[in-house]
Image 1: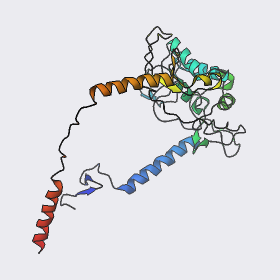
Image 2: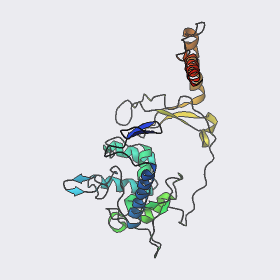
Image 3: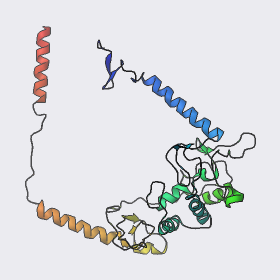
Image 4: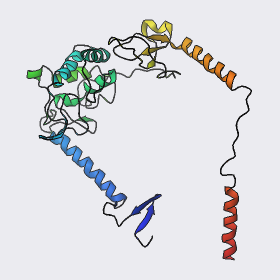
Length: 302
């Protein structure tokens, strides 16, 4: 403890004389507990989702005073409904993303749509008014029906999609995280698919050079894919993951062999036979200094 009220806790100097100084770990735990209770209360009461703006809804604004993710965005809402209806009709995530990109529709962050972006939006409960708490849907204790949130959401009569549509979509969703909230539903979660682990050496490194549907050089990452079905005899392959391209696919075995040969050839030419550069360890003299300091302390105590 120092005279000015400064102490060190966990290697961090804290000045207790400042107004915004923390009060200790106990206060942090209390703030976390209050935050968790507030989140649970909002879910049980049907309060709006917090966080960044979600596609289909307007963001927060002070003029006019408006909470984020509460009022629908009239320009984006028809596209959101179109995504939901397309998936309910059997459309693929990749096909939905490609269609949005062809139409020039941008995400909430002004980016292009990807398969994962659509897959994260359509299974979300917000579009029909649902909330998740502790991994299950928030329901009315008296009726057992889902609690409908107090924000703009799709209506079965007006928009043609609703809670029942979501259940139908989720029956085909295999991701466990997306299926949260279905624990109490009659529909059982589909069995997990056993996939043998494999490391694709150049997945995410290789780039696609094909002209995509938008007339641009794709330049998207090629991702490793496991061979299944009728194509299993050809082996695993690298494939372009962009929804508006899908025009490049190469078998991993010959690609890996070729690229490994290039790397080894380069190393043999530039590295083999060379002497490694050695540098002195910067802590070489530190043990001697510490021993000398210890000897001085011991000498003073005698």
